[in-house]
Amino acid sequence: MKLNDYEAVIFDLDGSLVDSMWMWKAIDIEYLAGHGIEAPSTLQKDIGGRSFVETAVYFKERFNLKDSVEKIGDDWNKMAWDKYTSEVPLKEGVSDLLEKCEENGIKLGIASSNSTELIKQVLSSHGIMDKFQSIKSGTQVVKGKPAPDIYLTVADELGAEPSKCLVFEDLVDGIKAAKNAGMTVVAVSDDYSRHSDDLKKELADDYIEDYWGFTEE
Image 1 (tube, rainbow, N blue to C red):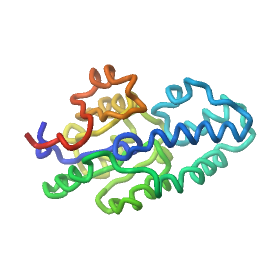
Image 2: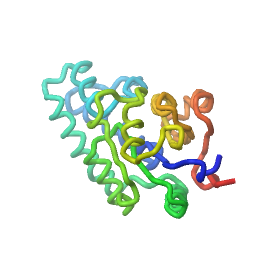
Image 3: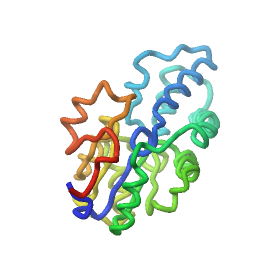
Image 4: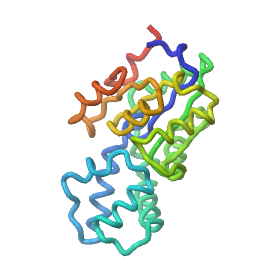
């Protein structure tokens, strides 16, 4: 698998570009506790792949919350802001890959289920937002992953054919979304999704523990 075989490289954000999945689990638990609700043990699996808005709708309906979907999303944004700024690191070796893509004239995009505000916050905190020519969030598409919508939208904005897009994803629904879009997918290791590694390897075209070993060889 060679980078020069592709016109664009598209990253999922949480768990793929940045090590942040731990943070969202903590926020979900804290948020529900604030409403006197204990987070179900299956919650992370139940919401995997849903867009930011879809997750807020799910929370409102499942837990019978009185707050509006917009208020739920705003509360999550506030809770995540500081963590994204100071506690969330880039995945190992990803900076090197971004540089290789730039050197080879490969366009870069973000296709994340997260909110636009938080995507821009974490990219800005690491000084890499200007490296991406397309950034799309779960608030900008109707159907979340595993629907291909967000990946097709990013590819279209980058001016790249789906078959010429290489995607890095850490969750099963995200891998399915990119494959449904007709793209090549590399599954990214993440402690949060370790339980589904076998399925990730089965669905994706390749699997990596980190980005250091991803070369043009």
